[in-house]
Length: 237
Image 1: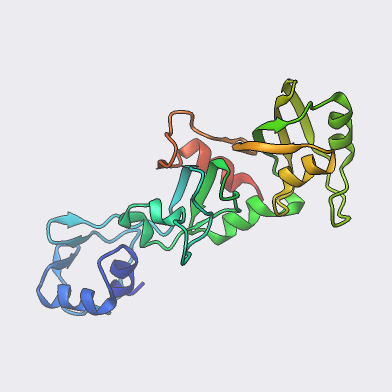
Image 2: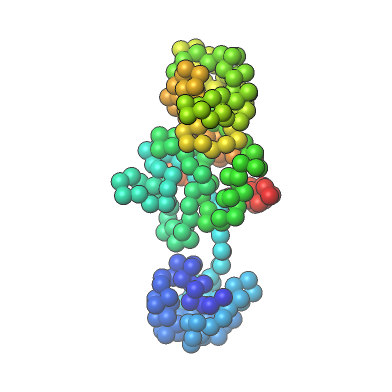
């Protein structure tokens, strides 16, 4: 890999900025001052330093965010704050994106990465990765609804959903439930309840497969995946 590309990817500015760093003799590879910003380097084996700081090369980042309501799951938007806007610059320069989408008013687990292949695996309908949500429902959720979800419900556009697992936590004029779906249709959970005559008033994603929301993460905060979580995500092939 070219040195200027590596340092640019790691947040040291544009290739022009990197060229200026090299010209100022601030960059060393294996303790040798580099004179050519286009020099080839092996990021896995070479020791690359800018000033007194060792450059730790990471091609990908994997972040778990507790997405807050009012923020959209997108990389940029002219009107609303996005989940990428919540990241520190040290992560933004990787040009990450959210894996799948949570509605603007929905909170909970959101994976953010720049690894397109991993994102594809997690979102592929063929993988049947279950996504579990906690919700508050305006209306009395019944065992009939549980059976309807288990069979697949017909949405307003005629689409019949895949079977979903619905668990009633408490029933009443405002019911509390957990539901697991294996698809990601637009507003799917909300539309499924509308199909059985009820309305979602609060929605929170708890998990994607075995990747569970860290309950210590405050709303709007994030952290990198640990080794066990990352290993699980990469195992979905």
